[in-house]
Amino acid sequence: MSTVDRFARIPNNVNLGGDKRLQRALESWLPDYLSWWQEMGPAMAQDKDVYLRTAISVDADGWANFDYVKMPEYRWGIFLADPTPDRKIHFGDHIGQPAFQEVPGEFRNILRRIIVTQADTEPASVEQQRRLAFTAPSLLDMRNLFQVNVEEGRHLWAMVYLLQAYFGKDGREEADELLRRRSGDPDKPRILGAFNQPCNDWISFYAFTMFTDRDGKYQLASLAESGFDPLARTCRFMLTEEAHHLSVGETGLMRVVRRTAELMKANPGKDVRSLGGVDLGTLQRIINFWYTYSLDLFGGEISSNSADFFAASLKGRYQEERREEHSALGQMKVVPVVEGGRLSNKEVPLRNALNEVLRDDYVEDCERALRRWNHELEKLGVEERLTLPSRRFHRHQGEYSRHSFDPQGNLITAEELAAKRDQWLPSEADMAFLRSIMVPVHQVGKIASWTSAPARGVDGKPFEFEYVRL
Ligand SMILES: [Fe+2]
Ligand SMILES: [Fe+2]
Image 1: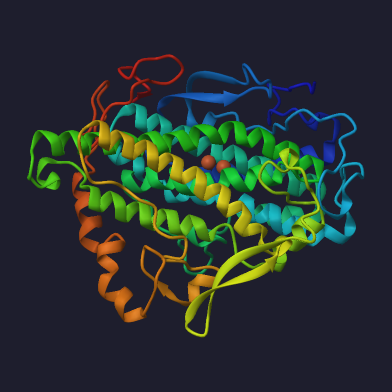
Image 2: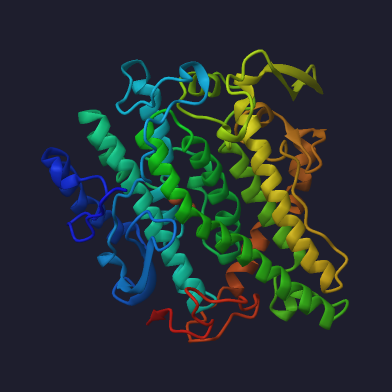
């Protein structure tokens, strides 16, 4: 097992102290990171004690320590899952070879692109969520927001470690650029579309952590299979932290659904908005928005990049190790495409359809969450249901981005889409309504009117706990 240096300036289990050059490079990046955090991190409570978990090892049990900490003093560290002795590459063209411990020269550029693209999402989401604490519906929610934020910061550290340790000068330049781009900035935007969308209300925050962080889970899981061992080990540990972000989103939306259902049952025929709740129509449109932007993150349905990454043994499929066949050669996948003004099925060599294969796993996971929320509606006696739109609806990347579709996936004209847009996607009025109900509830044990308290608190603590000492 690796030794953890908890008390170093940069806590780590990669023996940073034994590599002075790298240590100096990371220590000189640290102040830049901290000024980025001050400028773009949470806009509230930076000087307050927050009950946070901090990674202190990579042990399956007991990797985290819970305590009050002020966010700028958070111990962002570099932790890689323990190495597997004699690990062999288990997919792609390099199957059977020893895992790469250094960057293979011929894959240097694509590997750097994979890492930078993942890395860029981490600070981006912190920037998107910057102002949410001002309207937190409870202290527990505020604490969860900050937990997600500091861990996205740690994920940035995880990726910057790889860039600086394995990519020399180029890597250092990329690390600097990661602190220069800004979510939503027209001149220096973040790399991926979803990470430039505003996320200024809590329904959007839950949808973001439910759908967009969940894309992250699937990207990290396929990189955790990587033949480049340091990347695989980094991603394995990041997944441990990511699970909490996903549950913040999934249970966050569940709590809103429950509250809405309660209001509907207690006040038949009344407008939920007038009762201070979020109507199911608005929830559906927020789901439609973030789910479809998150689908884009998987990349094109037919993609030579996906084939290259897999062939190079750098990015596997979800749970590649559990599959029976690891070459993805000599197989086809059917992908619906638009040809001659109508949808038709096209057979694509599997390696070129691996983005779509990963998207399949993601969609299935999202459907599971929808079933849970709908079960809650059913339990509370509400007949309406929430749904996921077709993966062709509202796309900005890939095969479907050049055409217009309705939420059922039928091809429609751009005019039809424009006419129905506000029924299917959040309108100005929806967003104004959400802004109007986002009033801060910052007292211990209190909760906003539009949601319900969670069944459990954090770290065995009750909901009525002072998670943030304001
Ligand atoms: Fe992350
Ligand atoms: Fe996350």
